[in-house]
Image 1 (spheres, rainbow, N blue to C red):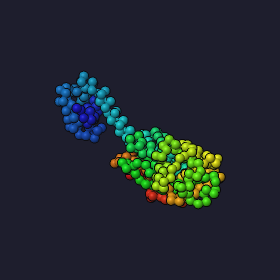
Image 2: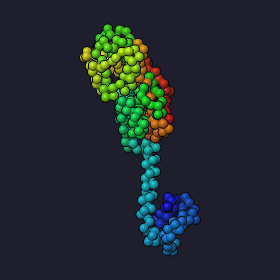
Image 3: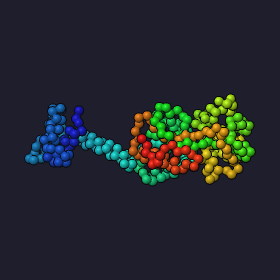
Length: 314
């Protein structure tokens, strides 16, 4: 098989008309270029050039090889350009998982801001439940992602970022006069969000484990997909729910919804995950850095930061 160096030597000798010119263009010596072409001729038992004065003239075999050589070199140059563009952020594709309730964690403008600074990069920001983010990173569908623990990540590389308390929400102020215990939850209709994943959701999983330890059965009266829908139902007096403190501290949180901590605190633990022994591409690393920085910057005084800024992903 011909090597790329042999193809380069042949092509530039053919297009520039001499081994000397090809050597100068490629940064080689003239004997090296001549030897590379000779090896092709020996391998295939053909002659690629005849001399017409000082100029090389391709034979029939040489003229046949020229367009194929050009395709090979164009492909090599295209591959080089594509990889360099990916490294410099000029093009490529970034697939990254973000928190489902991104707007509460300083991530609502991540796509627009990144898109403006990297207009030629294809961006896939997938806002899923943390359980699905872990699976998508594991399968390679996503290069990296932000998620909440606990979900199964034993076979992924994870960097812990921040802990945020989960609180209880009710439209009845007397229900929030003291910390909520699992035993008191069934006294009012239970509303839970993330209906699709049910008890696989990280927050719901922690609540279920707490209830099981205390021998309490929790049956939601209403299940919806979004935390915003759950909050509106609570505001309407249809039941109570748990939610991240970031949601309760949002400017548009209903004034008639009251919150209280759990008697034994429950936390969302945020993490950045990648596949095990996988190195992120430079452009994905840049996006991950921005996302983590925004997440930490949006933290409240009640949140526990587990990573130092400035943050650089592995």
